[in-house]
Length: 315
Image (cartoon, rainbow, N blue to C red):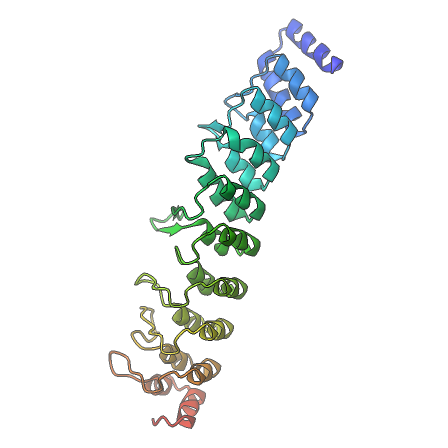
């Protein structure tokens, strides 16, 4: 450390931009976790809260807990108008020890919720558990605004974790009493074809009959429209009705019928056979009076027509 002090003394005597050099050196020392150097620079009155690239953020982004602790003792800001919240930064990188260090100096009325959402997005289950223990609201709902669009969707931490297929994080959030049906996490898994995530949610009692907004297809209808046989089989095993209405407007696809109608429309024989085995109504009609046989006939799906005939449906 004597060499560091001698360099600082020489810089001061030469009239160099002393404050700027100190701030830059403090950032480098912090991000490399050179704790003694950090202490020497602080003793030399390095600015721990510069407007550009604070050393605390450098330490947190590298998981340098010891340096971060020294900087916090020197009154480095854990919250900044420029860099938002240091706790959120630790949550993003998944540094649970750093997050634990920052919790006592972070406003508990706001930032743990933000950090929890960030940890869920990036799949850091241990950080999620820590923040939930600190009373972060695991069921806090926020608006996820799509860049370049006016559209926004409401999401919970659990929904963020489901969207990114972080199964361990989903389990951690459920352990912390996350509501499994808020903001349609199962719908998200079904719509994206995440079969493992859908199985996990159903195992933890997600509602297969969840009432979704009008612009969303029911769960089973979404799987059938995507021609996802594995997902359809999973939902039917979870007691979804084989007579689920489609209730969605999509060009060239039957609407206001049951899920058997689009299966016949596509000529998806395997899907049709599965639905019939689960007691789909072969004679169900759309609002215009069309049956599944009518759609199969209209599109020349011979195999679908033959399957329906084998179950006693007339052309």
